[in-house]
Every structure is written in C-alpha cells, then in structure tokens.
Length: 126
Image (cartoon, rainbow, N blue to C red; front, side):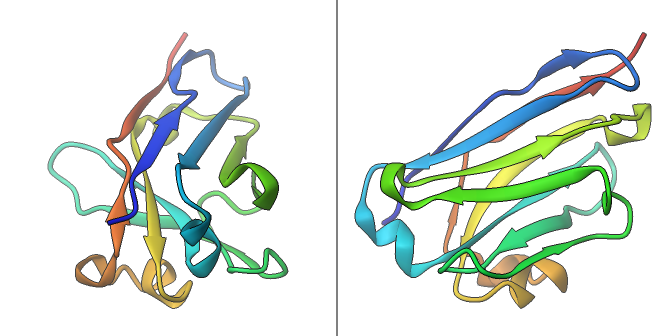
C-alpha cells in the first residue's frame, strides 16, 4: 500500500503562509491523483484541493480558492500545498490523500481514498 508522509504544519499568524508537503516512497505515486482534506473537531473531513496524476489539472474548494496552490514534483514523488493569506478558520488537521480521480476529493468521497497521510496540524492564531 502506498505510504504518504506529511510535513510542514505549524503555528502561523493570520495573513501568514505555510507550505505542506506530502511525500511517497514509491514511483506508484504517479498513478494516483493526490489532494488534501482538512478536519476540525466535531466536523466532517473537508476536501479542499486536488491535482491530477499528470499534474495538469487542479481543483480547489471555494473556501481556499485564490489563497492555496497545489503542485506536484514528479521527480521527487511529492505534492505540495502552498497556503497564503491564512485565516483562523483555516485551523485544522490537514491530511494528504491519494485517490483514483480528483472527484473523490472534490465530492468528499472519503471511503474511496486509497491512502492517507498521518495528518499535520495547522493553527492560525495571533
């Protein structure tokens, strides 16, 4: 099974930036679309962004559109989520996910996620 390792979370002030990384140890990473969910206590996991297998297609939830950018480094089997203009409401645990197609993330079909990262906490607070 594909193993995903996340890094890059932390504490940041409102308006600040962070970059999350999701790395896989196998070239099989290329056979998946990859994206990010986030979750706050008491709420459902929310799909916020996805990038296609080839990297040519990206999608974003309205809540992050224009502020977050997803990208893919195929040579290093890594997907990044650059988060700018962070708001307190962006505070959550962020999970990387490997999926067969991006629609799994954009429609919140959690049961169809092939592999999950361990999660990384992002806290936006002054």
